[in-house]
Length: 289
Image (cartoon, rainbow, N blue to C red; front, side, top):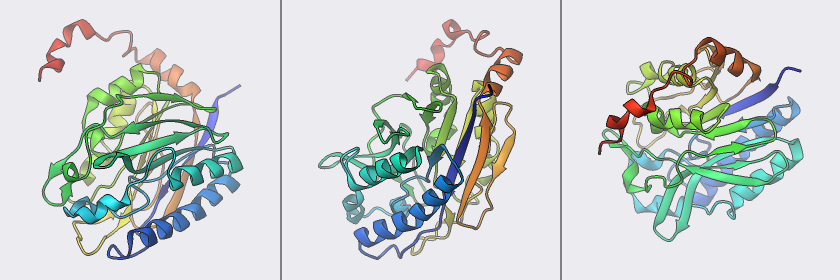
C-alpha cells in the first residue's frame, strides 16, 4: 500500500505586542497556534510543525537581555508538555520550535519532536547561528547546536529538522539525508528583501539533492517596534523532485497541508542515484576549518 502521510505547517502573525509581558506573549501565541492544531487534528493531519520560536516574536531583531526570560526547558517546560497532550489527543507527530534553556545562561534555538502517542523523542538544536545586520543578532541569544543532525523515527515517517539559517548550508541537509530523513521540517523567521528570492530555491534544491520531502515554515507580517521587514509567510511543502506541492499565502495566518507520498522517495532515488554515486573520499576539503 502507498505510504501517504498527511502533514501540516502553521504560519501566524504575532498575536500580542512585543512590549507586553513575556508570559502574556507566550500565552497569546499558544492560544492562536492551538486553534490551528485543533484544525489540523480535525483534518486528520499526522505530522505538524510551527514556525521558528513560535511562542514569541522574532526578538533577535534587537539585543536585549529581557528576552532571556522567554526560555523554557525541553522536554520539562510547559509548552512541550502541552504539545504532548495535543499529540496524544490527535495521534499527531508535532515538531515544537522554542527558545530552550539547558542551564542558566546556556540557551539554544531548538525544536523538540513529539511522537503520535505523546512520547518525547528528542530535539534538534540550530547549528548555524547568524549575526548579521540588519536585525539578526542571534549569537546574542543562542549557542550553536551540539546535537548534530538527528533523525527521529516517528510513527509515520523518519523526521529531520533544520532551522531557518541552517537552510543556507547544504552540508547539514545532506547529513539529514544520510541519517535516513524522509521529511525535513525547516521552521523559519525570514523577511522580504533579504532572502525571499532564495525561499523557493534553496529548499527544493536540498529536496532534490537528498531525495526527501521538505516542509518550510515562515511567520507572517511586520513585528513592531523593530520592523526589520515583512515576514512573508508562503510556508510550503516540496517533494523529492523539488516541486512545491502546497503553499500558503504571504500575508495570512494559515494551516497549509499536503498528502506526502513517501513511496516517491524510492522512485526518485532510483532515477537519480545521488547516494550511489557520492564520492565521500574526495570531499576532504569540506572539512577544512
